[in-house]
Image (cartoon, rainbow, N blue to C red; front, side):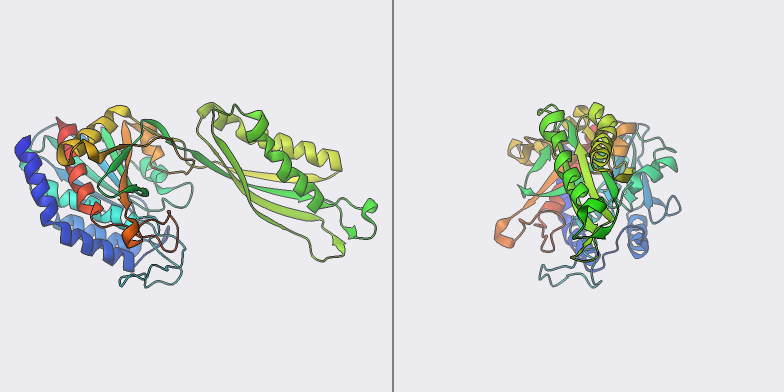
Length: 396
């Protein structure tokens, strides 16, 4: 095992320039959800060059590569998301996006190059692998309901059956040179909703003849905050945000309709099941009080991302063996963002670690989805070696 660890470290160094070049090419040519066709072509070619059997007809622009070892054993899956965001880039990179209004502002370009690096590393030691590795390049992570759900339905976890799944996501809040771990529910279930308040229009000078949809909507917005402040146990995180409010046609006309859109994020499964009814009960009560009616559309998002401790411990050991205990960062709290890797974690033992990319000196300190989002590229070979060694440990 010691010799394999050393070999993996050497190969990660060997392929560092190629991984960085790949990341920059992908960054320069971002494609948003459901449009990743050129990205698919590049990934498929790269995986074939790494010695993988490649499929591109599983679902939309997905790519699945299979690397067979020389012994029977587990099949380990490694997932990379592929899609960029509808964000206008302001990084100042020489390799900045050439596609207006589109940017890899969440690190998926790095994820793709890291996972390809793992394929290259493991292909050179495949004679030592007791099992298989399935590289799942997944489109449409950023757009609910997410690509993972459909890939699973199409059988991506079968033939051969995946026994364990690894995931990686960059994190600018963790310094480069560290890998962050959290056991259990690490990310929320993010559900979206639309509320339409239907009142009765009229002249602003005769409000008693109307039902003011703006006033009713304002009361709904305020009342909904009682869910987190008064109706849910404060030790169970929940956040509800109304992100858009649109209504009215003129200053002297009382609005007949107001449409609001929002999101609610929960970590506790019991609360996930009842949050829709809690929201609608409040909407209905406020509307009944003021004589309005409503329409309510609730869209379930990704499930909670729950990391399996056994899988996390494999990756923790890989990080510590390669880089020392200082490289293992224990994430103190979950976050209320969503991640469709959660669909894999519902089906089989899985864990996603957070890859430290933070480096304020080079401007790698902006949050996900920011137009100036950057990363320290030293994290790329770090993660490729960690995942490759994690595969070896997982196979036993």
